[in-house]
Length: 587
Image (cartoon, rainbow, N blue to C red; front, side, top):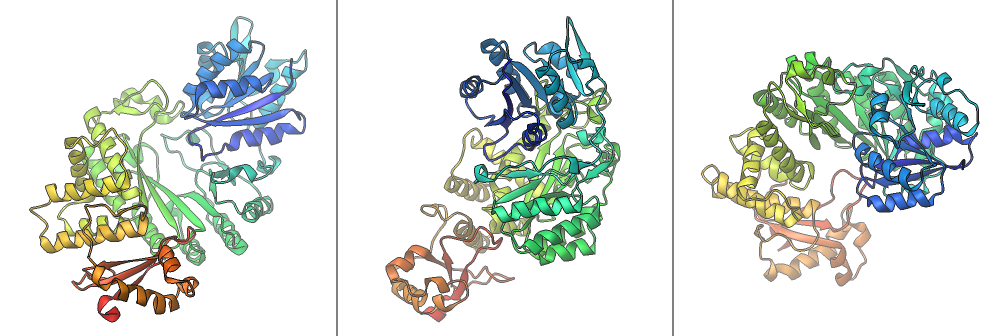
């Protein structure tokens, strides 16, 4: 048998990378030098993936399996076995760890399954496969074909000390414009019944000495983002504070993304975050529901009062991106309950509110009690819920539509000021606002095709005009126009401004505006770099727009102001640069 080993990852998106195969390569690499990695995405052409696998000349293929790629991997393995029947195919990962016997029974092209933590198990299995006369029955954590039957060995104990694992990255050259994943711990102290982390108990940590070495490598590399896969980064609050303080000391441009429990945050945690440079930290906070009965049933402990207070404080610092999550389809959450959860979390004003849908993961507590909850789900991955005792399929479809418009408008960040203005002006709660918007999208048949930014602005203006014409007066529509103009200038700026936005005709004062730009604005903070540019060159770098309302203070007033802004903004800063000058000061 050829001893070349190819570890294969099929990622959800091109910008993602796979941490698991890198750990496996480094852990097994000391003994098996002929081990390589091949990464793809689920959007890649299957024939092209198969061609690369075949041409690799590997004798052993290992696939990292998750709910988002298992269907493609099963198909790939079937085709690969047909064109390379002598090859050994091994599957591992969370999607094949729960019931490996059924997977082997249903997929004759697969030879072995590595269940659970894979580093030690794969090393022992490769040892056995490449050496004749080994005993498969003595390897914990595997399932395999034994003559005419399938054998499943005892589980392997978890790695006791994570420092045993090597640093998973050889270099960072291949990660330009990609996300790097990393873990400082394995396990979770909580027992949420929708999550596979509930099937193992306890948390294991990398030592702080090892952790500092690893983080410094990331910081020194200049990569854009490191996303920690720790289930709850701040479950040991003192440790999480020490890690963040160390990252701040390194003063790197790298962004670090953490999944945290917001009700565990204390004053020391907040004090450290407040001192962080803009863009250094990003927090993802899984609220999932604010229904006490739901939280109790899924065994999720959460004090939403503390969550609210801490999230608002994080956002008030203005130096971090905050992302919140909700899950639709949980037990005891009907449409009214979910509406309240949505409004509760939306009111926190996080940068993103991700509306997810319950996945009935193999091995999760909720999946074990499907009949009790009246749950139906897709038979294919990711096993998404179709209905429950509390939510009908029709209601889930409504939430899907709301999720779509929420992504387009709120989560894109391109309508920030417009949405804030409308939701404080209209006599409607956020959920009802997005429900009306999704109804409008259905009525106008906007679902089913992608929309350009300018089309989104046009649709939004039409929606507000049609649905809220009897609520908003002329001044409020005029203000809406100015907020839409502001959002487009801050977050879009590509091409021409949408025709749905009315602009002030400044043709007759253009020379005065440009004179002010060159002689006065370039002396102000943030615009000094443009000071000595000729006018023609200056206008390639700095733009201006006249507003008929001053919407830049706490209370809008009807007076003309000019907004000056650089076309290219720093990607590090969380706040766009611009300068506001009363038009009368220029004229």
